[in-house]
Length: 86
Image 1 (cartoon, rainbow, N blue to C red):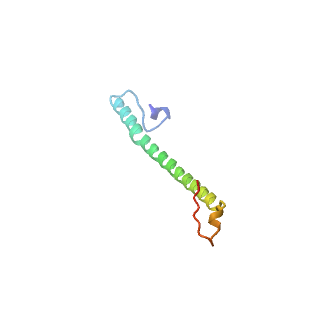
Image 2: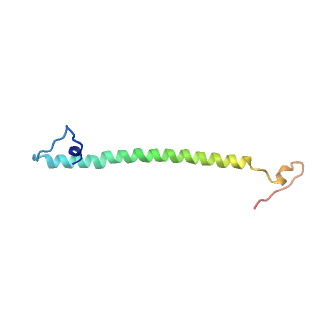
């Protein structure tokens, strides 16, 4: 039992008639309430980190794009040309 494993003073199981019910309640609470809360918190943290990294990747790509040398035909503003890349 998880509560006894950690030496919890608030739950002592002494083979009383209600102990099996208590075990079930603690097991259900752990499985449903605690694990779901931890999963939600973990997924929120992972999502925040992924969004931050996506913003950083976008910023690096935009920086590289803006700092790249322009093709020769675009640099000649006086004459009208269409530059098709690719």
